[in-house]
Image 1 (spheres, rainbow, N blue to C red):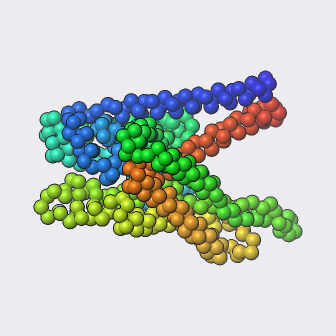
Image 2 (cartoon, rainbow, N blue to C red):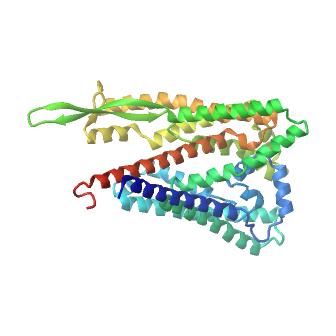
Length: 434
């Protein structure tokens, strides 16, 4: 068979995986329009109109509008993300879990996945119960009571676990990270309506066409800046010793790539949730006696206010350093280099290597946190000053761009792997099929 035939087989497999990803996204989008039985849609719509810009708006964005429609997938994959983050923190701080997950290979990975699923189920149940009781007490149900609560809990939990299963199917039979693609689809699904709202506001004279053009230019520059920073690396030279019978000679050299933003989008998500929490609490309890102070806190932490800018920036910086230290400990990197026979030129192995890597990562994290602060806060000023749609927020833009970059990287990796396999088959190397 010719090399062209092998490439064709590789492309067929890639197209098959891409079709599965597209099918999974379509199924997900259909699910976001299936409402929970017993919900009053008019009251839900009124609730979201009164709570724009709060935590409800953030969760609604991540759910692709499912929360506003109160569909069975209203919780989306938020319980799964929370369970995965909690498991990462427990793994980093508990030696027994770290040994169980990291030193048992594939078996450890399966156990970790099972624990995350169990944590997702528990969190989904608790969140669904609280959510259903709140909806029932606020008069959002047609027939509030125990029957509605049980029905809503079963619907919410089933929708979340189905999305987790769908994401795992994308990991196995599709391409890319299934959970990340679901979040990406949720964010992108609101872009057409956001663009339509912008043009409608321009037609009515609320926003000028020049301002819309400036917003579009800003979005393009922000995307280019995110791509540039996410690809930026600080490469530390690593030498590997080559041993001979009589002496040790200098072997090959490699690099230890350290990203500028090693924490990903986690700091932005955590900071957004915490800074918007008082506003959401105010919308639910601010009208009750004794909770008037929540309204004052909510106003002080509204987007564009000085306190909001300061608190949001501090939270992003804190989570950048915290998550980087948890996920990429310098001690583990140094131990891995030592086990593989690698060392840093001019740096003694052991504690000196740990200190050097830690200093480099700390300096990178400073720039990474500043980058995330700029990306997340700059669009907020546009939202406040130009009445731009919420989907132009920095957190949503950052997540969308990072997920697309990861997806394209995996597509390219799949193509390269297919070409490599074709080359091996064409060469008919002895023992390849074995």
